[in-house]
Amino acid sequence: MASYKNIVVLTGAGVSAESGVATFRDNGGLWEQHRIEDVATPEAFRRDPDMVQNFYNTRRAQLKNVEPNAAHTALGTLETKLDGQVTIVTQNVDNLHERGGSTNIIHMHGELGKVRCVCCRRVFLWPDDCDQASQCPNCFNQSALRPHIVWFGEMPFEMDRIESLLCACDLFISIGTSGSVYPAAGFVSLVRAAGTAHTIEVNLEPSDGASYFAETRHGEAGTLMPLLVEELLA
Ligand code: APR
Image 1 (tube, rainbow, N blue to C red):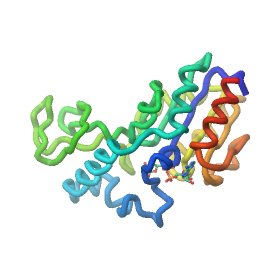
Image 2 (tube, rainbow, N blue to C red):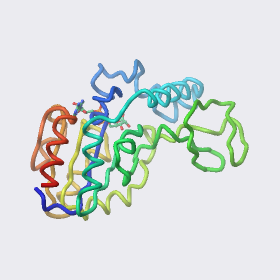
Image 3 (cartoon, rainbow, N blue to C red):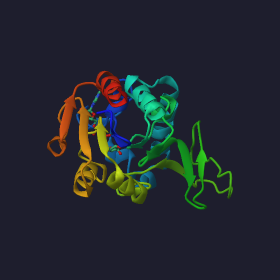
Image 4 (tube, helix red, strand yellow):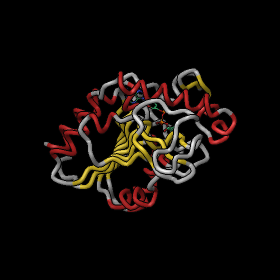
């Protein structure tokens, strides 16, 4: 276990569940009382921008009241102490990996703490509420800022870089993701097709893609990840 030098970690909502951030598919199909398609699609934003902005404002505000858990901090420790490279590719839009001590993070589905302008395409750090009256700090257009979130039907960020990392890694760990949303759900197959990397799933229960992993560990990420990191650093 201690011989891995190039580790890619894919994370999903389950890694933040113990911090109190709601997952997407564990509540009868509702995410914070909303159907995903009512708040997380470009069509929803066109139909009712105020409602979608409000939804993300609430999620953004919630970030101030949650803390990284033992899984986030274990990954921070892994990056600091491993004699090699650790990259986190996260589907999560929260900032708990950063706050848990990780620095090498790709937010493939965007970040709650940022907005972007649909006119000039610039991305801005935005810690507070955003609405249709907010003005772009660069081109000064109004009604042009949207959450910097990848919605259903949109292309995830940095896919070329992610694919290169997956093909070059010697260990791929997937944590807290249901394995039901592509392209992330296909990463394990890509890793296995590319070479001989070991693959581990860490999830509360077997995910939809569990059978593609060479090794599976089922239980809470906050319990399992500190143990796994200890093994990797031994
Ligand atoms: N520890 C480990 N796994 C957990 C924990 C926990 N404490 N709690 C829940 N899980 C697992 C659940 O069993 C489930 O398999 O985390 C997974 C969360 O799955 P989803 O809610 O589907 O979240 P995710 O896979 O990240 O969703 C992918 O879908 O809605 C879109 O863009 C959104 O990024 C999101 C993407």
